[in-house]
Length: 324
Image 1 (cartoon, rainbow, N blue to C red):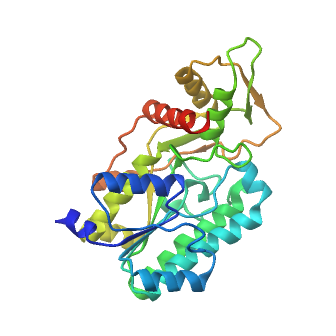
Image 2 (cartoon, rainbow, N blue to C red):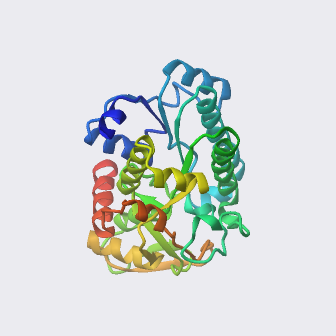
């Protein structure tokens, strides 16, 4: 019953060409969903409020899932804070405002674990948001994403909507950004390891000390979580609706964490490369640890399926096929 309801709805996935958006499209297509609204940046400028509103009014989707946004690692965030702040705020507000104006019942927003306070207790609960200072290396992005999730929260409170934000841990997978100037650490490590060779003096430079711990999740697991929560909402699951009414943010994580150094060694092992790692301490480490408390989503019945070894292998193979 729920499956048929979903199949009969028009689903607008904003940012469908990015890592998360493309993974979600692939995941839903495997489940025989066909009623997508997918447009490129040339077709719709998400930074333009009027154009977004007119687009939603014309296309009339029943579901909007926001996978769009400007993303990047520490270097990109530090270099372009204005763009990270402005673009992410505009994209989120334009989409959620258009959803409300055009009476779209189902709106799913995506946040990021990096928007929690730098000194949060571990594991990080949803309630810890805004309880302390943000990490300075991605403050602009964090502030922007907080505006987006708070907008959903305020619409729920003021207009009795049921919009919600899923807060994933660090993601990786096919269609990731492998540009060393603005990528996250997993694709950066994969690219550096693969581009190195097996010579004795070959070195693999890693930014920072390698000591920070990170929780990562294969992007397909996030796609499955989005689908899972959408089913719960459309099926009017009482426990789920009560949960997002109390707090419109839900953490999505793998529950496992490793140091940057350990990730690098895993990638070296999978690719049969020498572990000649050099740590450049001139670059900041960022937050030393951030693992999400995902008890809420687990209590609903969802859990991640893809192991770290499997996910890294698939991502490495995708990189080889598309970049080598």
